[in-house]
Length: 369
Image 1 (tube, rainbow, N blue to C red):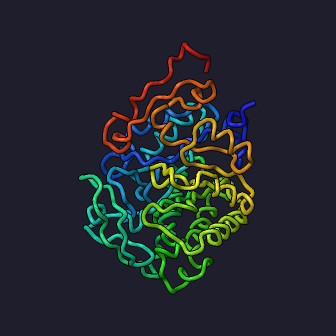
Image 2: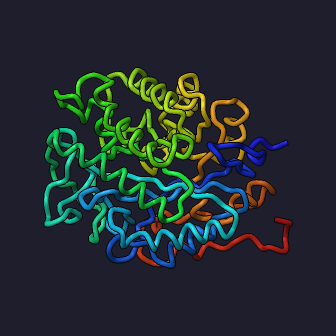
Image 3: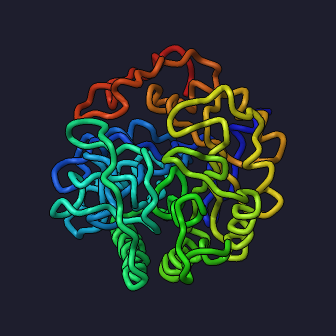
């Protein structure tokens, strides 16, 4: 029996299999950071009955964007586009969680209101680029958030989560990985603050936990999740004691009783698989002892490696990214050991259907669904 295709409970939901669509920034939103029909088609293509999908990183505030073409939920006018997405997923029997993020210092003035400076926990120079209409460009050096502004950050996540509820999402995932704002507060390589949001591990985790509690207050804990990248260095991230930091965060999230913890495995650096890094599932293996709810593992998995980590007990579901981009019917292909379409990295980011909704499905007559 395949573990990957066994049922699993996550919060109030039961899923028919454990193949999850990873949150994938594809920069296909229309003017005003609004999802359009193309995005609804993309998510519908990748929905199978009883499946879990995680929507791409969605901006919570006008100053939170790091990617030209990324969708938002900081404005009521963005709700309708997302409602079309969730309706399309639900029509095919799936569930979809909304992933919320703020890019923080990983941005450029071209993406900021009135050409302002990006924000972050501290002014720490870094080389992480931003994606603009002109492509990848150097970041604009950020300014440090004032203590009084942090209350507004918490509210922006809460308000976006509220709009997500109106848009019909089934849950919310807070993006605290990949060197974005919540990750920047967590790790001491980027957080040099000396107030209540800096210094100790508990202080650096305060923003994430404050936001989690704010969202829990309206959604309930069992429909809230968090994504972490305990070994991630994308965005020039680092921490002096990552094991202590991330075990603390996992333990505190465990106390909240959230729906799941989503972990990026250490062999993935940003969007690239780094063969020089540890190939063992260290992130999930370590944090499993501190978080007792479902764990989703992400990071370069194929069918065989997904089955292996599930059987080890270190993870409960597997998020697939690149293979799901190129194979809208990925669960069926994995279940029946069918050949996979090759992905085209050059079209991961784009403004058209090319490399987005034009990947072929496997011949429906060749195998039973």
